[in-house]
Image 1: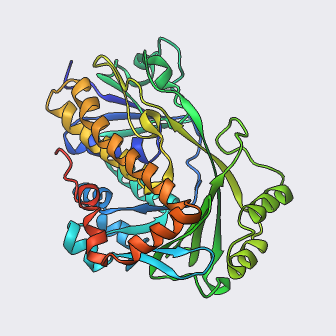
Image 2: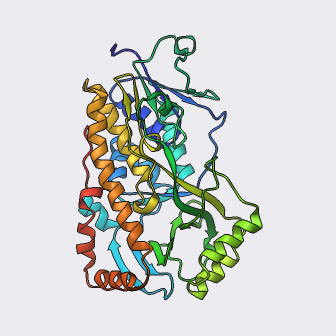
Image 3: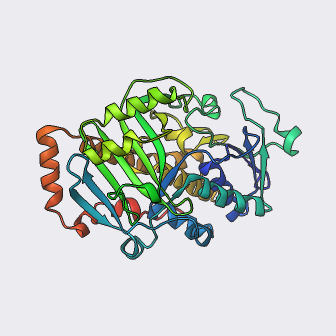
Length: 386
């Protein structure tokens, strides 16, 4: 492998842009290919836990992010029926002290812009918009960038075209869950929305996550429940009225204040949640997958963006050290598997019914906040290979 050859990256989302900056930090140039002609402000809010912000700090992006995010003082679990607090994990300064990195919440577009600005300013990164790396066997890189890349990185999401080039790779499958996403202005927000917290309201078979978006002066709201597969594409939407009615019905037995809030939601966007099952991440030392292309997962551990960021950063370290891609894949798979297990546990706990729900509430209420925080040391305190 010629060290002076660039790395080709398919996809200019969080994984792809973070990978480009991580490679540049190691002195490796990248060519990023994005099928969209313009990078739009798609999506809504996201959570960046300390394991992700630690990497943002290493990439020199923390000052920019601090200007557009909020650092919640706590992550709180609340009953969606009674609005009583079940448990709370401290964050804010506590997170900075315990996990040596902040916990931030922000709009996805603000993170993307921060990454894009850094990529645009870096001479080792070159972005090609309106150009897609398809799933064919060959692609004429030489005519576009003047040489063959040393490596192709598939950072092109859950419907990855690059993944189709890898024998034995995982496949996208519907998770059985639906997410409704919308924002709610601070001025009109109900009193139980707290600007200082990430709050997860829990109910039988569903849950609702709410946190502030500083720059937009609004709250990000994600409602998740079980549902039928509407099929591709990822952003398949129902007619507006039918969409609102399904959302209202899914949470009809909740606290009256939550039901009233949902009744007045104007345009919720429905997102069928897909995941990518386990499979090969690499084809020799020529092609490798990261982020959702490799392991799209359910949002129950709020780690989708963080795992993409970890993948991107550690891939650059493995490549710079001359390690085989199989070593990178083995290293990351064990980490991702543990995060998936945590997400599966949270799904069970968040959507518990009957006696299981009562037992969950009792056990959590008896634990001190610091004890609950210790459960996240392995996740938030992770030190990436550098």
